[in-house]
Every structure is written in C-alpha cells, then in structure tokens.
Length: 178
Image (cartoon, rainbow, N blue to C red):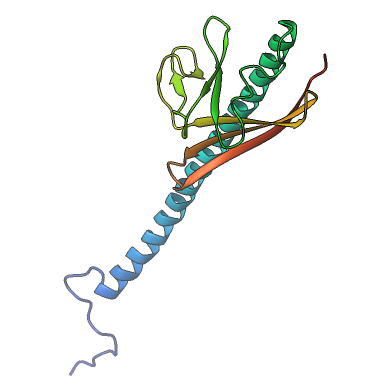
C-alpha cells in the first residue's frame, strides 16, 4: 500500500477565489481613487485661484479708472466727482474704458451686466466679446465735502467647480488734490 501525504491535491482549474478577487479590487480602487481625488481638488483650487486673480485685477482696474476720471474732471476745471457722483452707495454703476480711450460710467439701475471677455484682445470690457462670469460694480461715497471720497468696487462671479457665489471687494480713497 502506498502511503498518502497530508498535502491536498491542487485544484485542477486554478485561479483566484472570490474573496481574493474582492480584496484585489478594493486595493486597486483605493490606488486609483487617491490620485483622481487629488487631481480634482487641484483643478478646483487652480480655478478658484485664477478667478480670484482675474477679479482682483478687474477691481484694481476699476479703481484706476475712477482715479483717471477724477483727474480728467479736475483738468476740465469742473466738479472733481462729475459722472462719478451718480454712483452713490446703493446705486451701483459700471465703469470701463472704451477702445477710443474714453472712460464711461453707466448707472446700472439695480444689477450690472457681466463684463465681456474678448478672446482676440484678451480684454474684459463691455464693447465686444462673449459674456464672462465676472460682474463688476462700482459705488462712491463722498466722505468729506469737496475733499475725500471712498470708492468700493465689487467683482463677483459664480464659481464653476466649487459652486456658490464668490466676490472680491476693493475699497480705495479719492482725494481732491486741486
């Protein structure tokens, strides 16, 4: 008689058991989801950072345009806040420069239209281009009669990846230096 060893014979079909397959899939899933989650988070952060930078530049541009309009008014020997004083707190305006270099101040009457983005020139303005996600409003408040005014620029947008409304606010002062 032959003596049998304690070793079981191998399965003639081979392969993995269901439990081994599920464990392998769980490990693979974790290995793939980690980098994908990181990539999505990076895209969201990059989008928000880009939009904050653009909004900050648009807010600063509006403040510079208000300063330029004040200078234009002073050199014209008129009211230093002419065309700006209609943009009182609670009455937002939009301010921009036209292609011909003229600074326009337009009362919005409640809500201002979004800026257009002209992909040919790379400019945000109201003259041409497609509607952008950014809306810029401008208000002014005279603090000391004929001496000082406070301007407030708000650039708002709806964030694409993070959801919700975002905004950048800039407050600056104008002085009647004449």
